[in-house]
View 1 (tube, rainbow, N blue to C red):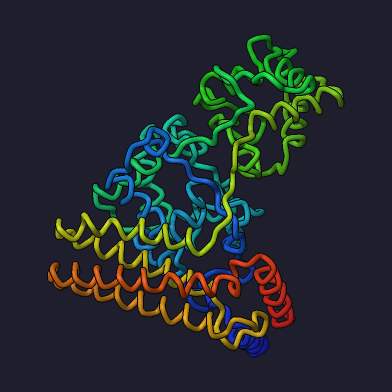
View 2: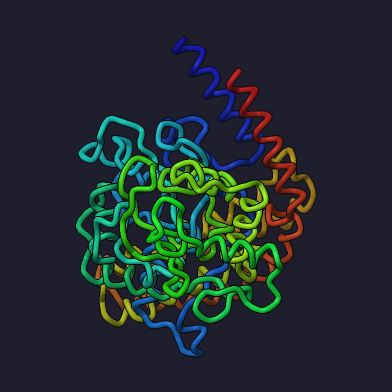
Length: 451
């Protein structure tokens, strides 16, 4: 059997090589077979910064926190080897409904934070996966954790890094930066809601009926209602713990943006609003009829809505994000902050390598056209990686003038490389049709290797 498994693994790696597909950065066998980190989507969750809305400029601390959020280097050895970061589970500080790791997930969008894979010391020897929550509006949602264990966002973040992912004790500036970044992320604007969280003008009669049901006292206890816990005027949460018949006391989640935060409940047991309403109807004997259930679901959809929840990704967007992360060096280099320089260089190199994989190798068996353009794009990105390595090596050696000069060369070459990347974009995996064909072929080859 061992020989058979090795042959299957070899066949899969051969298939990946023929496709020109990336082999997992974590190396063979680190993440279980069947792992999906949700990297297939071309659409990115929209990220709205409080400072941007106010017309200001994001601080260095926010930019550092944003970069650190995407940095595998702040986590423990297993996560670093797999190139996982906070952003792997929380894409642009939202949730990742596609993430699935066999043995750690019960369904897409859930993750067991107490397993041996990332921190053996935290292993509780059972699969107790939790729903990956969106982090939009974090500053309004204390206490933190599904069970509200952490009053402080800083303590919560530290526990994720050290307790869940066995990372080293983070420097205070990194914790401060991550807090600053998460406190910047706004809820999506929702024109369907007015002041105090009430439905805005234009709501349908069905939604209005659902709103009335949301406020209606429960038959067995007039002090209870949906709105008593999901307080509309307070971001649809009371920030308290309740036992709603799901296995213990859990923090009331916000309903804002919930249309894009499935699955639901702390363990992700429900996939849609109808199942959630059905749970409360059973547990609290609400006696809802089909029409009332339909009205409540319509109301929840109105509350959970938001403008432009996703944005299409492309070369320009990727380059803007890379430069945004690189801008951390403009402060870290003059400050001679070696740890931040090293973390930034490592993170951006990872981002550039991921971008390179959007341009399949010339020998790719699915993306056949644009070989010259794809080759130039990959070559340009390899040079940028080398430039950043020079920045990192000079910073590590304390040669900060040399590091600044290398950074200037990197930026000049990035500007020169941009046209090549844009020319190759039509032949890349940024193109939806090529992306679908590529993933279908990869899945087929993986299935063949498994058999």
